[in-house]
Image (cartoon, rainbow, N blue to C red; front, side, top):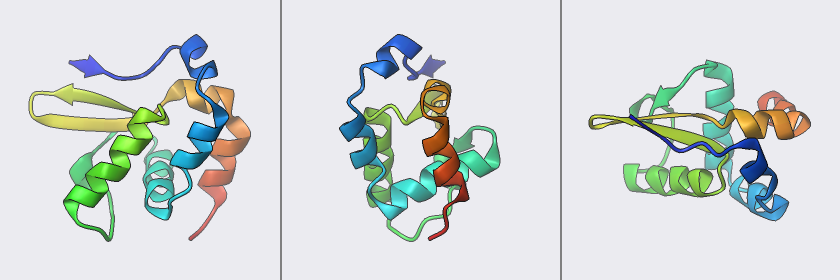
Length: 102
C-alpha cells in the first residue's frame, strides 16, 4: 500500500500559486468537489467526467503534483482522496470549492 500525502510542514512549503493553478480548470475543480462530497476515497473509475480517460488521468496527475489530492495504490487499483493537510491549511478555500457550482 502506497500513500502519496505530504506532512503539514511539507504542505506549507507548496507555493500558493501552484495550488491555485492546479485548481484553475473546471475538470480538476470537479474532481476536488466530488471528493469533498463523497467524504471518502474514490477509485478513478467512480468519478463523473466528460473527457476521455487519458485527459482525466492528466488532470488527476496535476492535482497529485500540487498535493491537493493523495493517491493510495492497492494492487492494480488507485484510490484518490483529498489531502487532509491541505484541508487543514486552507479551510476557506476548501469550503468555497465545496459550495461552488459549475
